[in-house]
Length: 295
Length: 260
Image 1 (cartoon, each protein chain N blue to C red):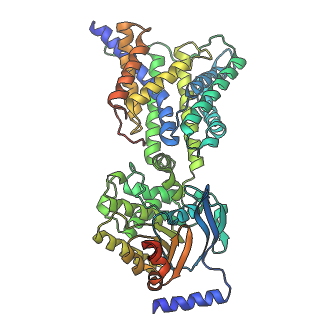
Image 2 (cartoon, rainbow over the protein chains, first blue to last red):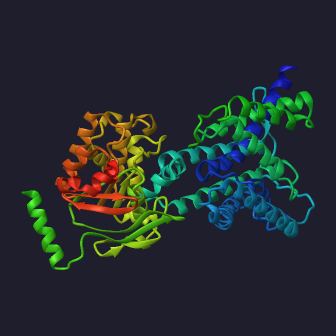
Image 3 (cartoon, chains in turn cyan, blue):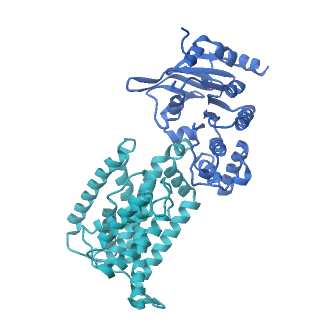
């Protein structure tokens, strides 16, 4: 492998890592806080992409990329809150909540995907990003649109980190994730914080959808792959800290890039899943995790 | 003398048929056929420390659970705080209305620092203000609980048991409670640490805090309580001065079994 090819593959992996960290962050946030796995996360990503296309694309409302991204994030937050209220909250105090919500979120995902099919049809679409040209730093070369994605995602995750560590609401969300009952006793409004967490996760999924819809062609069924990748990232990295899935996302991105180069696109998912199973056997709490879940 | 004056105060209160500060009426909770708490009636005065004893499984912690609605609510009955039934509120509103509780196990937010644990409470209480005020209130609560100032920024999960208990008590105090429910604050502590908990409770008593105290460590319970209530199989079997209650045959029987 030549150096230039190596750098190109590595760059591709890092860019994927940025995207995967955004996709996995929301999934991890819901898992640590509500203790459930949201199987509609992929559908949220798809819905986000379609909302952004509807608002931003010249063929639809044509309000431009920035407006579409902002509207998507806000709309997905609201949709996430409603989704949680209808499909997760009713089962909160049930002992088998994990299994119940696997079913309800899968059902919700199916409904969302079919709604998207009805509203936008099965024909593929693509979001047009505003930048053009390439950016280069030494041997590293990415498109300007990839650069825009890296910038926005980095800013988003940094803001989220600051929000979780430094603001009262963020602190309360971490507190609820760590100890629901103590949080109630300390006067924290747990139902409100759960709804906010779910909404935030959906908003992040929506933003990820905006970028996926610009990199690939959008179809209503494109959410399965992002959901699988987010699942691999969360399991591989663990959720001990909110940074754990971010490290894992870069690891998965880089492994995927090199695996695609070495064994091709067809076998790459198999490589990732074998790796995930190996981690589950050897270190079930995740590569960057301790045993308990917290934020 | 203090006890004497309190008794007169009680006497005055009840004779004039005024509502007690905290009144528990017909409180009950069942799980299927098991009555964890049956028909509990109690009335507690402001500034009183009511000790609660009873063998394991007698319903002491369930009593605290259903008073705070964490993790479950009562099936029947009322808890009147200054005449208002708090059980109509949601769990977090009960906490914000001034009923604070600590758990038997050291229940903290492990990855948050000691001061952040208490700060979270301040920020969510009705007394929340600017960030600077909130931090000051959190530090004050930690000081009140006797938590060492050098460990404020240590993650609560990394602290020893005793200090985790102090963080929990500080967080409860930060709610500025009108009633403090302490669930076995002395469990798994050394005698020296128990003495510090005792001193802390007595200090709170001086500040006129109303406290319900569940405890298995009898010397601590009798030393701080104005009255002692004993539960057995979800029922109140005795209440009165600690000395009188401990001497009661039914209480001895509940703890040690019936004389053959």
